[in-house]
Length: 249
Image (cartoon, rainbow, N blue to C red; front, side, top):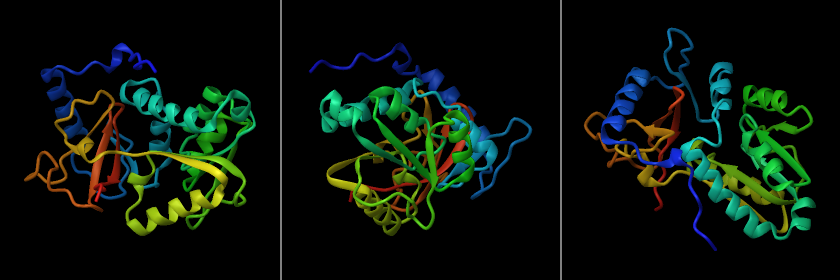
């Protein structure tokens, strides 16, 4: 195999540029409170934990998958999907579920990138699903209730999970989420799940597309985070999302 060719936008920021981004992020997310949404005065918009307002869902939907780190995330997800789905005929005949589809970007990505014959997007948030349906009128976008999708068991070749696990607040919820993914799979099916690493939560990281804020002023590098702690990530378009930190242990 050949190493991937990364677009120029993935170059590292200079120290001065990174510091400027950090200051801008801190100003925009100052005063964040759990589940609050502010859409006026040019302030940040808040979402995360599966709960998005109409404004924050729209801002999330505007994220371009070709942007910086998102390009890299999807590049590696694509490698995993290609590895396990097999040849072109198998891909065309595959049935897939985007479990936690949000505004449908990852659902449309599955269809446009691989030509998968049948893809269903499932999410817990109606605002996100409304945007998904408006951007893909012929797509299938379904509401999950009580941690379960309305789709039948044992009928799908692939379940995709793109950065959903960090929005779940407990190990019990993650287990339920994983159990539902496995319920959907036919024998021999597989799950591709993408999530954050422990190292990504350090605000000093010079990511182009997003960065995490210090959760405690006394811990500016987020080194003392424990599993289940709330963290705040801001994309460069101004959207702040409350997530949860989970360690490998």
